Length: 475
Image 1 (cartoon, rainbow, N blue to C red):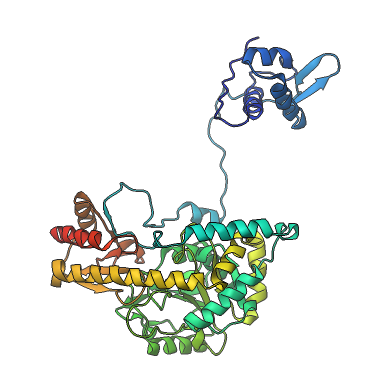
Image 2: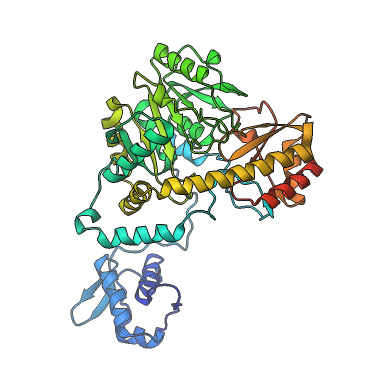
């Protein structure tokens, strides 16, 4: 019996394609239970392929129990195999989700990197400057690490992370961010999002009150929603979260003090100290998300809030996805010593450990001084582009907007002084080739104000000026 089995030279190994086609035919009862399959010689001749290919496909069917061999007779479909797909089920099976599954299914993250029609002037935020990163050097380090890695290092690694990388991160954070820690407190994770998820799993029970910034990072809000925490949003002003507005009691507070996301406000020293006092009174934990702490322009950078902590109440979170490139899913959290065992165990339960080869390469990249040199170049380029952005805003928009976030990080927020529609401005800018991003999705419930996020690391200074000139025609 001739068989219609389409095979493609570009569709993967031929034996695998043949196996999948025969398996599907058995499951759909094109070949019924107990029916004899064509001989390997006949099938090879029909399809114009090597008999060896057919033998490999049959061996796989035999190994998985879809077929059985009968000595001197041939190969037959195993008895009891086959699901009649010609008659569709009356209704799909009802499958119950956990609370986490239900929350995950409705996640409403507003990522700036969502694929959209390409526009020439894209003020995308949350992205690194790929033009300046030394990719050739990075490839050499990766290759060197792969070549010299002993076989023992190809086994499972430490859950908390590669020891040289933890030491390199610790040294860098002490010097650049005044973080007080030792390498044992550094837990390497798959980006800061996993750090937030681990914190929720380790510290938060359903119903626990958790302080969040309003507006604030959606990744934090969604993690807490899935953990069934009681969200206690606190309004952010031009100086960040105001400790006077904090609730009397809460289990955890999530803050972005060095460059509040998304407004860009920098939390002053007085508020940092007040926040630490509140945590002590409330017996709460503070999570300091320092996603953009490496970038500051003008004046001395404020030290991390973790460096001011004397009681071990601050968990410090950082990531290399923002400074190096997004696909490098390596971040870290610095845990108080009492929580090291819990976070290490939580990381092991989650995914054992972060990919070791990339950890080794990153450890060398940092300890050799290349990371510091790279950051200096990025800061210089960001500073020049920031200046071009602020000059253009002043020239073309003037008093039509207020600006926040210009002192640090890699994006600013434009706050129109007149009442405008966020959606209409975004759409109008797009018709002029300009992509900007609204702030509304980052508010809890109803937006308190209309604003637009403008990132600048991936735009040239001329593009920034032209983009703002065109945006001024809409505002």
